[in-house]
Image (cartoon, rainbow, N blue to C red; front, side, top):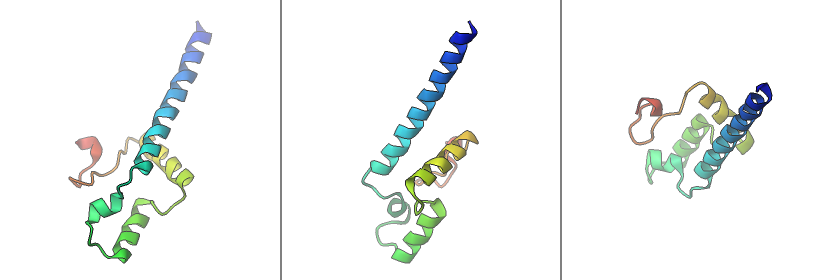
Length: 90
């Protein structure tokens, strides 16, 4: 019975890892730029770069993924671009 539970637990970890990886990749493959959507089309490049740095989008993808996992593990789903409120509250 314990072998079954261990296997199921490992499978669940694998599935969670896969789901987080797929959602992360999809969010980065989408052609829309979240910073431009947040600021608008006429935002100055200096402001775009500043917001990109604040959101961590200027970091390498593996580092962004680790930050994403850390934030998810703490229940932080980020801030909605449209409503400026925590996603968890929505």
